[in-house]
Length: 461
Picture 1: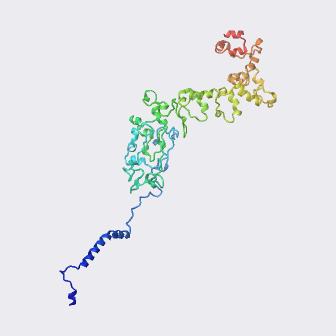
Picture 2: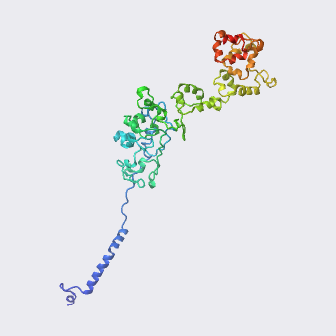
């Protein structure tokens, strides 16, 4: 009976209070359900994180760091033309560079079949040295798994070749979005790639076999000896390859080459007319200037020549440190010519008087047994031997006049009588037949010894 009272008939509706509780519960669950779900997600174990980027092999990447693997010597056949004459490029023409990437040219040209133009297309339209010929970073993105579209926010990929350290040198390359900058100063030249390429002068004719190398350095820059294969031709063979220095070298407004740079002074190499400015060039420069003075004029003015040759400038490097002890022999040979810089009667004479070897030096100043000339039996009296003063005077009269005046010579060589000389004939055999030419050229030396009415002088007039 009681059981029947508790059983609710299936057709009767739920009580009102129960329906209200059910709706309220549904509303609360609808409001707190998302938060509850989020809370449940937060409380759940974290999902697996992304994989770290590929790391370089132990010891780092080895290829593309040097021109040849393991920094082996580059064969001469791979070097630019002219490297045999100039193994190292001039720092005055090509300032030092800082290359902070690794790159394997041989892999790109041999394995990947890339051409020079694939990366250096700008060279084919370049008409000045200041043009940037290196490829832009975005160009690498076509093959490497990396995005350089925004250099302030480079996005590395997941492949090893898309990591910053794959190309950029440094343990922390790419950290905080920075890499070591490359320093490639402009060459101190006047040069246009376009003109050379338009004339079918290909890259290897100036830069050597870069496709056989890994990293290309400044050693692959052109050498002047190689340029001369075209620019130093003669006649019609030269064509439009002009040979003037300022065709390639930078110049001042007056046309002379600029030779002073922060890396040093530009001087000719040894193979160019033997004009290397080595310590012995003081002796050699006379033959270089005599062969081609215009060559010297490419860098020097005539004032630079006259300042030395007129004696206004006396370069201290002309004579070695022990010159005082050995200059006597060179003075007799007159090589280099002493009078080019020194006044014989003052500079030479004053020094000789001080040390007691001059003719007019007081005997008290002269050291015992010290004399400038050989004994009189050899130097002044007959017969004439190899040490006789006649031969010394003919070999180098400047050595005599450094101490002696014309009066000293006239003491013996002037004619007797009014001239007061001893009448010693200084003229060689046969001089009478050619004295007319000597008198016409310069009569003054004749009148030192001869009177104007001397019959010997009249015979030569």
